[in-house]
Image 1 (cartoon, helix red, strand yellow):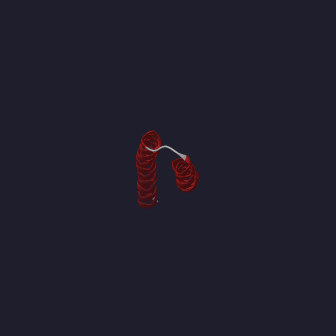
Image 2 (cartoon, rainbow, N blue to C red):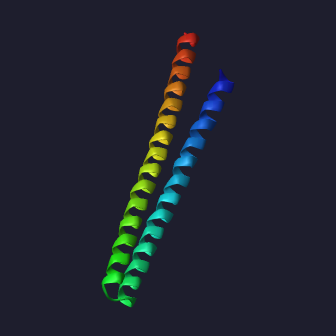
Image 3 (tube, helix red, strand yellow):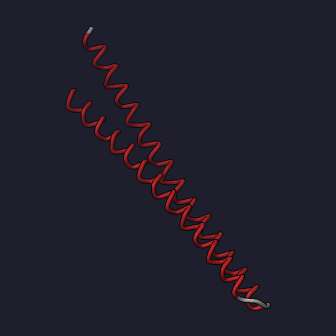
Length: 104
C-alpha cells in the first residue's frame, strides 16, 4: 500500500508540474498575441487605403480566430489536468481510508 501511495503522490506532483508548465505556456501565448496585435498596428500605420484596410481586417479576423482556437485548446488541456489531479487525490483519499480502516 505504501508503494501505491508513493506512486499516486508522484503522479500528483507530475500533475502539478504539468499545470505550472501550462501556465508558463499561457503567459507566452498572451505575449505572442500582444506581439501580433502590435504588428497589426504597425501595419495599419504603415499602409493606407482601401486595400490596406481590407488586408488589415482579414489579418485581425484571422488573429482573433487563431486566438479563440488556441484558448479553447489550452482550456481543454487545463480542464484535463485539473480532472487528472482530482482523480489522483480521490485515489489517495481512498487509499488513506483503506489504510485507516485496515489499521483498526
